[in-house]
Length: 259
Image (cartoon, rainbow, N blue to C red):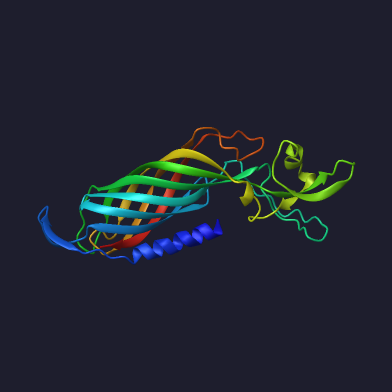
């Protein structure tokens, strides 16, 4: 996932460097140079997750209306996820005790592709004031389930216990719910060879505040609601009630360039 995020950021910076030819015409009484394209990057914080990164490629139809495609990478968490403190247990060489999420069986990431629209309700004077509007989007989601690995004391079958790095399974159900058996998380790098995919849909609607609606460089703030829905319950936790949908409140910082 670190490599995916690095590639995503490089792609974002590359797209921001592209320039298209500016066009001049009269629209709603305004005469002069206007912009017809927009490329922006969103840093989005939401309630059921850490954050998401998105890149938007937009076409400015009129001052009041902009349509855009959005590609986003993020994560979602179960409301019951809570990190425990380092248990501080001494372990054999090659293992170390660490904090972990008790009762967690999978990490859940998303790649979202959507089509949306921004509509402004107010004008602003050039280089001053704030343009107020709304943004809404619908799209498809590729959910990625990554097994969560624990370092734990496991019965080797002969009555002896050995420390093993294990993902969740029915065989290890009791281990994942037994604090004395758990030493900690095995780390982010474990589990990528066991990922599975869950398709779904997503939608967003929010208020959009733009400090540069006439400017070349985009500086905007957006806040609202986002919904991700999947065809079945997403198995993030072992015993807590899992759901097929996630409703979030989000706050997004948007930066980019018009051309």
